[in-house]
Length: 317
Ligand code: CP
Picture 1 (cartoon, protein in one colour):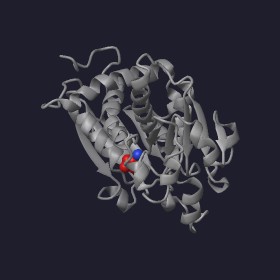
Picture 2: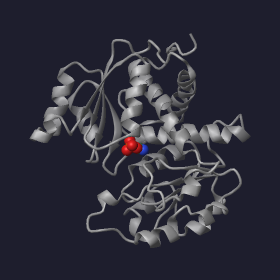
Picture 3: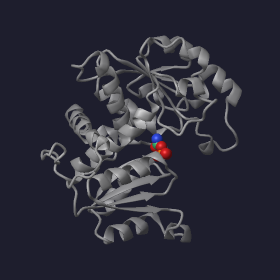
Picture 4: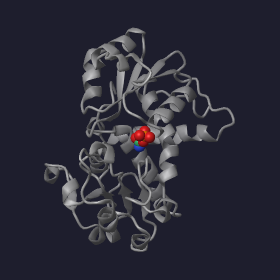
């Protein structure tokens, strides 16, 4: 794998390889000394033009646990605030001899563009409303573990239904998840108010509904998406109250979930808007499992890109 720019870059074999290695990587989390030598001497730069808690921290932890040197550069506090362009910023960082660039940018396509300018390997950590492939991988890792509790031999998501609910228009998470879940064989149902359905959604490899109540009982997992108010200039519609009534995972809707159905949310959450506190903190909520999975999955992705996918990274040594 040269870069990770889109979930479309990954076929079933590649996804399985990343998720299987993530299982091994996750064992490092329980060790008193969380360090593998696999990427010693390699340098990873996290270049973040947008805010992040989970993605940036987990890429940093992942790189450090693999013994890479990890440097964080964010737009705030860098020469970007003096007007330096994306191209000059990327070329400047690459000129220092980095091996991998992890990029988050508010413009769709920015990581792909960066990959055309430099020799270092590029990982998309979220670009505009386009994609967030490592989020989809960590979601798949979390769901695979959940489904394997009742079906230990499960290899793909055939026969499983995943409902992705919320602000689809502004979500990069949904685009990567639809691609990845389709490759894994899941049935995907997208649910949103008509005003938050992206144009062209009919051509996506998923079913589409505007009626959450008609869908909720058929899902093995519901993935609630954040209402991205910061990307809605001039307010948003429906109103917050209307949104919660129609599309929120409220206490009342919790009781209508299938038994054992998983609750996911990529975070950060708007508690009380798209998800109630009862749902976020429910026994079947996997939200913190997703956060924990972020480290193991990003270790696996870094290793696949920088370490040679067929070598044992020394997890078991
Ligand atoms: N899910 C996600 O990308 O969260 P952050 O914005 O905190 O990285």
